[in-house]
Length: 115
Length: 115
Image (tube, rainbow over all chains, first blue to last red; front, side, top):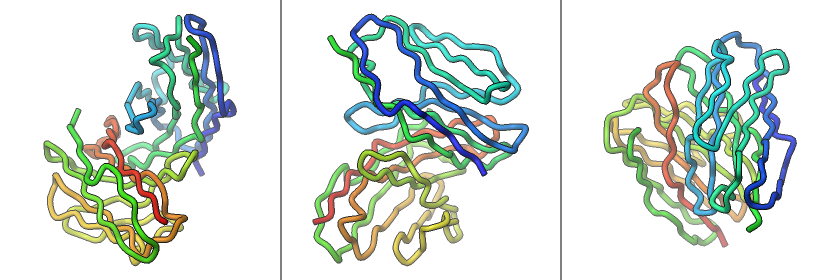
């Protein structure tokens, strides 16, 4: 069975600090997809990134970067120079391959950026 | 990405009543899903809404409690029947194209409070 663990329930950092959100996953599939979503206080779920299991290259998008390591089954998310607008709940999710798009979500990490 | 709307955005309902939530997409999509997010919790998949056939429910969710319709490729409804306070949650629909390389996008959610 698939499982996603986000051990950090809540994190608070002062604005401009860097912060890393951890995600550890379990799956028996050899092909799978990992996602990060952001849920701001308004409640909508905003897609941030999708990564497939064959692509272990790290990715950077502006202040956001993602570190995918199959050896440790981790897909961590780093925000550099955090801003107040980054305050939200962040969810890591996993889906199986080949058309089964059911997402298994982690429990989320509530990130608070202190001005 | 598709533009997804949900109606109502929020509602307060009495115990024992039913509420139908609508999900509308601005383009045809293959897959539509319904998720529940209980207060302070992660997202849990309720069912996959299948166009022209019965929805596929996840373990712990039944059609009598959460009947779903999907009359076409752009619209779906979820009904929460015979509500109790435990049904107070955010209900989100999501859409995808059914390909393994696809990304699932979410609607803005419906905040339901049952008194």
